[in-house]
Length: 541
Ligand code: VG1
Ligand code: CO
Image 1 (tube, rainbow, N blue to C red):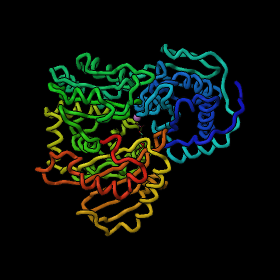
Image 2: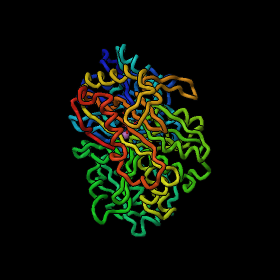
Image 3: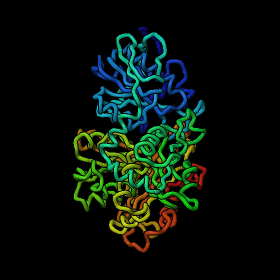
Image 4: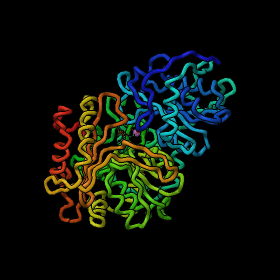
């Protein structure tokens, strides 16, 4: 074992989901090591314990894992479970941490950000419940990284990551595990596999776009091998270090292959995609897009059809910018509904305390208490289970939902890669206006409240401030502004817009049309063009 001298790097501060930087930054000598040592030094009582390690297979994944293994040994872990080839989807890593009662895990991923030598890399620490470290811990890790002067690393050969089995680094046992098996077993325990199997072997066509990312092997195993979907139902199923040059973000802009297939003539009945690390999902029907906020509401309203949830939901939660569609379901089911800041780490306490069963975000993330991460393939299986039992199309399920609960028209406009200074100025310009907005009228809308969202965790009382600027109007209409905490280049401004419509005759509108006046108000209020030089978003959801 060696203690290596080092000195701090600036900015090793985890964002919405871990530390994400350009690959080249991570490749600097000691950069990764500093962060990993900061994690290990911040943890208490790791001696002899089990750590889970795996990543989404992006460029630098293997090199990073070799370093982490030797550092884990030098820092006194007793055992490390690593996915074969260094692979583990984020939800699978969460499942493995929970199943083997590990102390925690290191997940290597920059999720939906592009990969390759010029792309992004990322790392995050998950705690023993399988979920992302809470802010208290990530703050402590960051503080430590600002004062670090040494790290510990064992010497030795590289680990044979491609072979299942076990071996030692010093006293530490390394077990190379099948990355799919535990996850597949968990899915089979939650869903009616027999019903899904009969649907998928009856000529019902699906297309799952793994976007050359981690979920390829998971989807092929579960959808094609176990559930009998015809070979070829999973496309782009080989994980590639650069995601085939693509942007592994399952939305209408970046999941182009799938969108073309689902909007073509003779399209399959069901389409889905997931992101770089497998925790996001996009659901499509034939020529039809399911908004992720609606998807969460549909899962909640139909959970009683699914074996793992047939006994009812304890409660639900959504991130603040997510539409209030699920709130309406919760009200009818007479269960609690929580509003949390953006990022999965804020659901952990509610899930652990048994206060919620399902939760989700507008950013194509849905999940439940089965793990402590959002889970892309889980959401796909949940939908397939509902479709198999109800025998209806995706459109029919969605229209029926709107007719029962009303429709929350919703859109998110992303302005990616804008100048950071401009973005900051735009946000402070808005912030200054907040106190004067209530009572003011814009078009047909009068502001009822405006604030900078802050959240008090109902379980441990911790407070998180500065979580997005909200402008609320009557009847749940909202405009929200946030700066992304996952980007690595310039800034990304997200504008979220929502309006409720009870009238069934109006449910068929295109959201961009239904919200056109609010979109205009939102862009004008923040002086979009003046501060960003943009008049159109890069991505519309
Ligand atoms: C984005 C999403 C957020 C999500 C986060 C991590 O964060 O908006 O809802 O939890 O990504 O998802 P931000 O700060 O860029 O808005 V993942 O799939 O990248 O781990
Ligand atoms: Co992700």
